[in-house]
Length: 309
Length: 204
Image (cartoon, rainbow over all chains, first blue to last red; front, top):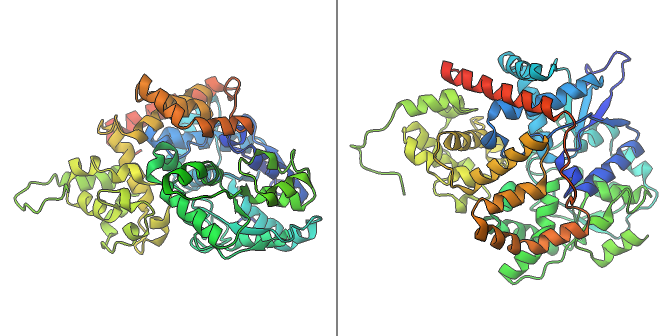
C-alpha cells in the first residue's frame, strides 16, 4: 500500500501528529518518540498548528461531520508540508485520523463535504496521505533487527508485560490500510520490541484487554475491576514493569492503582511505561529529556535503576 | 427490562429504517444473525442493561424509546473487540457510538455522564482547538453542580497532584491552535452542512 505513496523525489516524508495528550498526561510518550524515531533512522517533522482529533466523544459532542473535519484540517496541513505519511503514537489520534482518512478516500461525497468545510479556512485535502501508527511504522519500515542493532544499553533482567490495549490494534492492525502488522487479539510486536531491547517479555494473557478507555475517566467506578484484572495478570506473570503504546492505557493503569488498592484491598505498585521509553533507555538516550522516566508516578526499584543509570 | 413479551405492542417500524440510513454502519444491521459474539466479547457487558446483541435486535424491532434510553450506549469503551469479531462484518462499535450521538442530539441524554463529558470536551475543542485535559475534567465535574464538583475534584485530588508533580498536568494558559479562527470557521461550516443534509433527509 505505501509503495505507491511517495512524493516527487521518490521518498517518503513522515510528519508527526503528537495529539493533545503530548502536552499533558503523556509528555513522556511524546519526548521518547521524538527521540527514538530519528534514532531508528526515520526523519519526521511536526504537523504545523495541529488540532485535536475528536478523541472518543467528538461524535457525541460536536457531531460526525465536524469531527471528521477536525481530522480533515490536520491532514490538509500535513499535505501542505508535502508529507506522504502521517505518524502518530496515540491510539485515539490514530483511530480517528486513520479512520477519517480512509473514509475520505473511499467516499467521494464525504470528501466533498470535508473540503467544503475546509474551504471556510481556504484549505483543502486531496486525500493522498497514509496515516500510520508509530508501532506499525517501526515494525514495517524499521524492523525488529534494526531495533536490536541500535541497542547500546540492553535492559538485561527487566521483565516486561506487554500491554497493547485496544485501539492501537483494533480495528486496523490486521487490515491492508493498517499495514497488516499484527493480529487483533494476540499481537506479538510489543513483546518483540521489549526483547529487541534486551528485556524479557513475560507471558501476559490480558495484553489486549480493555482498561476502560474514556469510560474509566468519566465513570471510574464502572471500570476499576478491568484495570485490577490487568494488574493482577501482570503481577502473576512476574513482570517488573508494564509496557504499553497507548496514552490512555498508561495513565489509567498507572493512576488508578491507589484507588484499586483501596477498593479491592490489593497492594499493587507496578510501574507502567511506554515501549518508547524503554527503547530510548536501551538506545542510551537521556533518561529524563528523552525517555521521560521521571514522569512516571509509580516507581519500583527496577525503574529507579533505569532512571539513575 | 424494557423488552416486553406483550405481542400487542405497536412498534415504530420506521425506526429500523431510520437507523439503517442515519447511523454510521447502521446499514449493516440487517446482516445480524444474533450470534452474540459482540456481547460475549464486551469487556463491560456486566454494566450494560442490554448489551450490543440485544440492542441490535431492539433496533430491528423498532423499539426507539428503549434503545435511546438504554445505558448500553454510554458504557461502550470503544475497544472494538465486537467489531473485529463480528462474523457478519457489522461495525458494532460504530453503531453503538452512532446511536449514542443520536440519543444526545435528540435530547434523550442531557443528564447522562457521557453527554456531560462530551459537552465539556467539545467546549475545549471549539475554544482552543485542542483538548485541555485539566479544564475538560474540571468542567465535567462541575457540570453536576458546585457541591458535586468540589466533591468529585477532592475525590481525584491525589491523582491530580501526582500529575502536577510529574509535569503531566499543564498549569499555564491553555495550549491553543494559532489559527483558532480558521478552525472555528471549519467547524461551523461542517455543522451547517450537517444541518442542511438533515433537512434534506440525507445522511451525514
